[in-house]
Amino acid sequence: MSGGTPNPKLKRIRKYIDFVNIISQERSIYAFQIDQPEEVKPEEVKPTEDSLKGAKTGERTLKEMAAPDTGDDPLCIVFPELDKPLKLNSGFLNLLPKYYGKSGENPNRHLKEFKVVCSSMNLEGVKHDHIRLHAFPFSLQDLGKDWLYDLPAGSITTWNVMASTFPGKYFPASLIGSIRKEICGIRQHDNESLYEYWERFKRLCSSCPQHHISDQLLIQYFYEGLLPTDRGISGQNTNPS
Picture 1 (cartoon, helix red, strand yellow):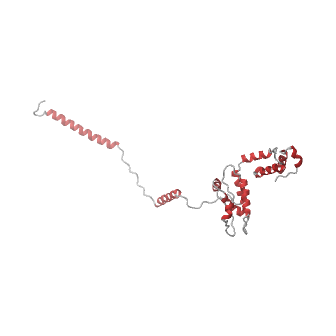
Picture 2 (cartoon, helix red, strand yellow):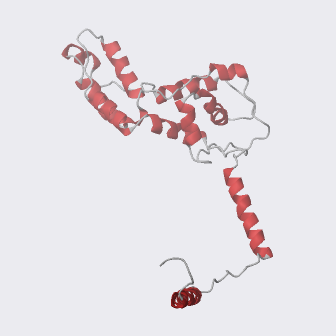
């Protein structure tokens, strides 16, 4: 259609379309408002004095747990109460044998050497067992000291407890069984004198005090291991010690 006076019919159609669009928009907005649930605001809860106190307590506990422990850890040894403090001089401590916890070290031999050194230390009014209990930690190094630190707090109350606990760690049942077998099957070497054989047998027995073999059986094992030429000399009067 060329330019000129607008068609009245066309104008009415356009107005009708505009009216319909307006109505459609209003209905859409109205429907949206109905479908959308009303936003529910959470109820504002004001903290009470007790809850604040609990939160602070919990926060303090977490901080305490995270903070390094600067207190003294309880020791495994419970030292006996003495009338006066027991002081061990550096000269004595330097004489103590050292045990490192390495394979091949004999804990029973360490205890024997340790007792020999401690026997030279005499303090008036102090028992030797008390001296041993105080001095023993100074004889341990490296893995040996780690073992001591890992013992439960208060588990060592006397020297006898220490002397029995220490070999139990470094002298396992498998090693005891191996030495028992060696004692039972000991044999005198061809070029070994009766004295040398006897000394070797004693060293073997003393290396494992936990062998639990009676003296009668020890005598029997020693005698059965003798060379035929030496059996008549020794008889059965040998008493291993």
